[in-house]
Amino acid sequence: MDFSGFLLMRQEVALTAAMLALLLYDIFGPASWRQHLRLVATVAMAAVVAVGFLPATTGEAFGGCYVASEMTALMKNILTVATLFVFLQIGGWLRAGERAHREGEFYYITTATLLGMELMVSAGNFMMLYVGVELASLPLACLAAYDKYRNKSAEAGAKYILFSALSSGVMMFGLSYLYGAVGTLYFSDVSAVVSPTPLALLGFVFFFAGLAFKISLVPFHLWTADVYEGAPTGVTAYLSVASKAAGCFVLLFTLYFVFGRIEGIWYAMLWALSVATIVIGNLFALRQKDIKRFFAFSSISQAGYIMLGVMGGTAQGMASTVYFILVYLFSNMAAFGVIAAVEGCSGRTDIAAFDGLRRSNPRLAFVMMLALFSLAGIPPFAGFFSKFFIFAAAAARGEYVLVFIALVNTVVSLYYYLLIVKAMFINEAEGEGLGRIRTDNYNRLSLVLCTAAIIGVGIVSAIYGYVGDMSAGVALK
Amino acid sequence: MIPMHYYLILSAALFFVGVYGFIARKNLLAVLISVELVLNAVEINFCVFNRYLYPQQMEGMFFSLFGIAIAAAETAVAIAIIMNIYRNLQNIDVRHIDSLKH
Image 1 (cartoon, one colour):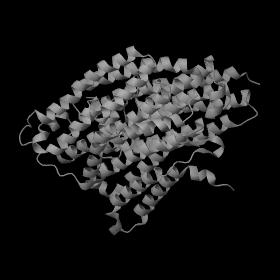
Image 2 (cartoon, chains in turn yellow, purple; image 1 turned 60 degrees about the horizontal axis):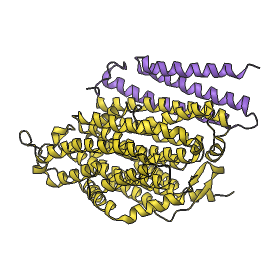
Image 3 (cartoon, rainbow over the protein chains, first blue to last red; image 1 turned 180 degrees about the vertical axis):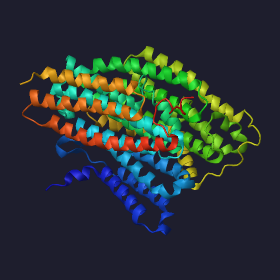
Image 4 (tube, rainbow over the protein chains, first blue to last red; image 1 turned 30 degrees about the horizontal axis):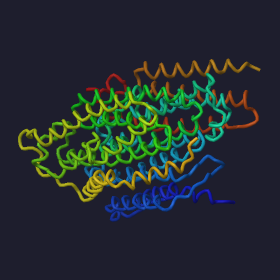
């Protein structure tokens, strides 16, 4: 028997090993070991990240169900790095109160969802994609409901599981019609025979709608704000970065490589959806009072920008999309690290909790400011360059109207991002304010890394060059 | 043999009944049942397309099998979460689960 296929899957194999090791450690380790669980989980995740950075191998396994390329390796690295940040940030929260005795659950449920996302990215067959999507979203519902004695968290879990079940049902319904039209589920075979017949188009539209639920594009975004607000803060960070990034990567691959022959159809759909997503995400973000809800709408509008890059349709479009997601990862993670620190101290998640943060915690306020500037796209931070490349990719297609709409919306988004900066730097805290927040070393490390990345990733042009080479390496069309 | 489009009409009807139930039902368990209707519509579709159009291969049947297994896992997780809501609120009516609405 030939096991060489598993060598291609080494990121998944490493992740599975880490997951099982954490599970066994949690169940069978003596109580005195348990206090090191956080360290063990972080080191295990860091080891998985390190495995991902070994030189990539390319090829197919399991008869084409699983595809590995340098691009998929890079995408999986982005996902694992996001998870590592979540582990660093949420560890302190997991230790507190009644949650302490089930700390281990969080780590291996999270690694299970990450495994699902990696399988999504590497899928070469729609059945494989479906299994990956479900493996990613079922445990994620458990994570959203993790804080089980708090009504909001339980409610967020229920909303997430029901919406994700419906959206995967819609997606599968589309796949069934697509299967009826083309008679195969392998990406490479579908891409060779798909044509705009009514049945195939019906299938494609349903499939696209199901995927748009996962990325929370308008008008499929209705679950987003509630789930983001109700879920524990670390889980919200995970949802807004890793889950969304995995969905975008899948969309990128399927649109480019599977439905490349009906590009005219999905191009028009994406045009309308990206405009609606950017505008509505922005307008609703303006009126939010809760910071997690605010970031839900901010992430919706960021997804609209990501779609702009996807529409580029070339190697440049792919490079700008992946680069945008990379930068978005660091900016959002920095912001959520600060939110977690403030929530851990005050127990509040409304924007007013940030009043006067500069006076009480200047360094946290500084990190939050950098993160918001990067999300808004102010030079010289990384967010400016990522937005610039996205716009350049769309402009290369001659989409000047779309770029103009997106630019106007960038100005709108600047206003609401600066509202938080104003709260931190200008508003005075009511009463005594927050006092000095002591973040633990793990969270501090994550904030330092994110800050360095926000400043560095944009200026070090080799990073974009690296992403660009990867994209050019993936044969387009 | 029964013509193929009879099955397709059945599955399309099941799908839309499921979507309607998802929106209209007020009990979380009924909402979950509606989602199951959607998934069943998918599985009928796959089997029918496989049997009528591509009888020489089995991909559609396999997809249905995987779909059934995953739907079971989905139900288990969803019911666990719904039970947790019941413990917190003593109620699983969607009209009462609105703490995130405001």
